[in-house]
Picture 1 (cartoon, helix red, strand yellow):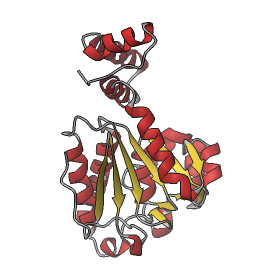
Picture 2 (cartoon, helix red, strand yellow):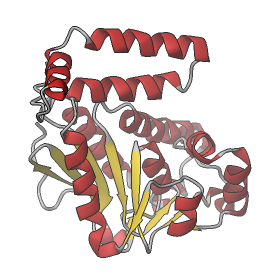
Picture 3 (spheres, rainbow, N blue to C red):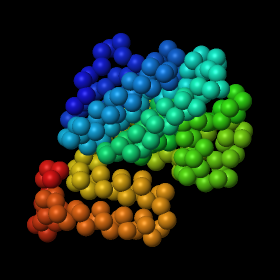
Picture 4 (tube, rainbow, N blue to C red):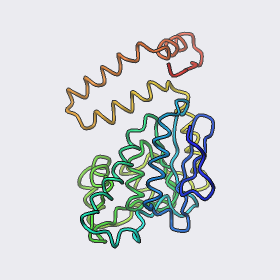
Length: 265
C-alpha cells in the first residue's frame, strides 16, 4: 500500500476500506499539473499496483473550482523544441498508466478539466462530473496541440466529428453536454460528487476482483486490436478465470441465492 503523502504534498492519497482517493493538491493554481506533481502522481499509481486489496481508485482535485486547469504553463513557455517530446512522453506515460491500471479509476471531476486535466480524466475508466464542471482541450489557442493523449482518447470516446469541433474551437463543454455526448457517465450536484464516486467504488468492490481486472484488460487492450484478435483475447481471459476460486464462489453463491465472498484468488 502506498505511503501516505504529507500534507504539503502535491498529491494527497487517502486509503478508505477497499478503495483509495487521490487528490491533485494545488487548489491555489486550480490544480495545474506541474512537473513535480506529474512525477508524484506517477509514483503513486505505480505503488497502487502492489496493493492487492485495492478495488477502485477515485481521482479528483482539491477544492471545488477545478479538477485540473491543465499543465502549468509557467513551466512550458521556455522549454526548447528538443525537450518538448520528453514533456509529451511523460504526460502520455502517466495517462497510459491510469488507463492500464489493474483496478478501475473513477474521475470525480469537480469544476474545470482543461488541457492536461481533461486528458487525465479521459484516461480514467469512469467519469462522474459535478454540475459546475467543464471540459476542454484549448491547446490550439496556445499554438500547440494536446500532448498527453487527448487527440486520441477524446476521438475514441465521442467520435471524430465532435472531437474535432471541440479541439478546433478550443471551447468548453459543460457538464450536461458532456453527459449527452458520452464524455462522462454521470452528472451530480457538486456537494454530492465525492459521495457518488464513493458509492460507485463500493459497488465495484462487491464484484470479483480478478474478473474486474480481466474485464479492464479485455476492453483496454482489445480496443487497439482487430476484432478477431480482440475476441481471442476475450476468450483467453474468460477461460483463465475458470481456474480461480472466485469463479467457483460466484457461481455457487448465485445458485444458492446468497451474497458471494470474493478473495481475489
